Image (cartoon, rainbow, N blue to C red; front, side, top):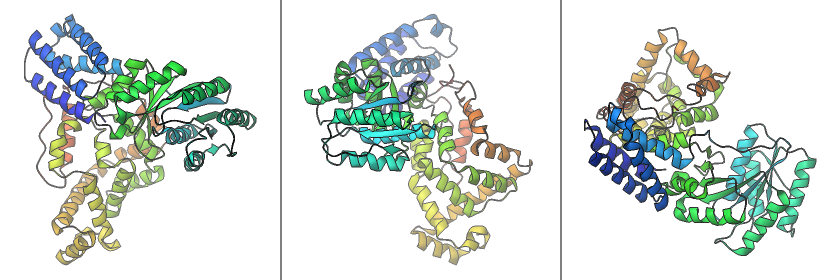
Length: 503
């Protein structure tokens, strides 16, 4: 998401970074480029106008005159404007749970926007917070809609309301509320019917259900790929229903991001969640600071930590840390790391969360660093025998040819993998000489015991960005398997020391 906007803004800031002092003409030119970038990202015109007006006002203030690096200040002004556009300085808004359960959530939206899937994803998210969740389908029109929600509820590990054929949506709502109260559910999620277009019958039914259920939260589910149509849909629903928040689905497929950037400003409603994949756990809490940071190439380290906490196997992480502390690192362990990386969203997904990587996209592509590369490496390792994975030193030319044929790759790729493994093994041996304390801390953070919570709590809940030198070191490490060295990131999209996660 926001890839095109990120690339365009990076080029604007690159041109500014080479200038010592910025004139009013330079600032006007930069903001004009930012304006074009936002419009190309399908951000609503009134929102862009307001953004540029405020940015000009801030750029002409005393803070810019006193700035050591005026170009850096333009980046900061853009960041502040994006945060404001996306939802302001407050903490991200989750679900407001009632003190007197059950909390009733009502899902609204057009047909095909992803309401049913989002209801199940939300149920899973709340179940992980130890809430007893009941899902109820009120969609009596779409074929198999109720069965779909029941299937997704099982996948999410939550309960669904038994289906009664022929019952009207308002009656289902009453039955669901009664069941939730009598059976002690913490949360009831009502999945309402949608249409391919807005019509009076759908709106009237949704309004009646809202009157019956009196939901604590009414969330509009909108498809991010529809761009400004999603914004218009939100406005139409908000006129008839007491909406409390928005959920944008298919955000991972939206390269422009105009809907997300326009929604809050146009409707005044907070974006609460982003649907980021088809998987049942593909629902991320929306945080204006983190999203603005990602747009400006700062990555999203908090999301990376959350993925690690959610997807990594704590017992395996601790066991691996103990073996690494002894300097042990064989190809089975490397294969396990590749598998964990895949679980966390793959190489491309993870790299999108790392600070500074946006700046290196072209070099990374040229170096062949991708999910396909990871899949090929996993195939190479799986083509080896147990003995070969334990002791790669026994791999001579004939064995390498057999492994390459089994994995469907060239022998050169087998050699690159072995070289990468050797470099990683040497690095782990060096680290183990210090008594393995670093590995023990890593295991504690990834293996629970409050370590992960302490990590996420750093800096008041916002993780600091790494230094420019650390980003350069990371770029060098990406090339462990060979290939051209990546250049440093000096004068990149974000200035040295700029930390958008810090309030």
